[in-house]
Length: 94
Image (tube, rainbow, N blue to C red; front, top):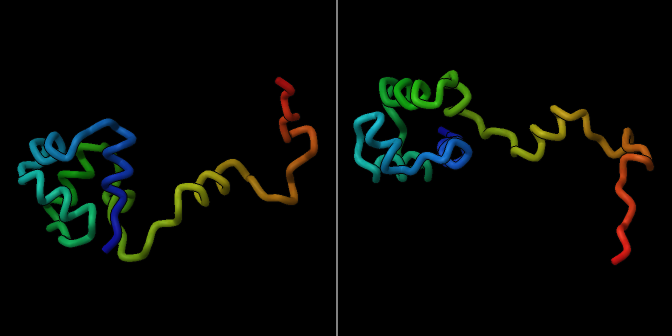
């Protein structure tokens, strides 16, 4: 099982300890989850998703998640073929 817990925690500024308090587990459990050493129960996965106010599928998956860079490129429509010369910043002389 794959997860985005560390990424989500970092983005929201929540420590492992605080997330553990919010869902009623030991902080070590959050660390085990993030490393993939432990798979959450359905109840725990739903509690964690509720803390972040996202669907559980956004946090946990049976397949690897695409990298953040790939997701951002797709969201912005980035591709080497559609970049105009005017899109590239000119080097600033100092």
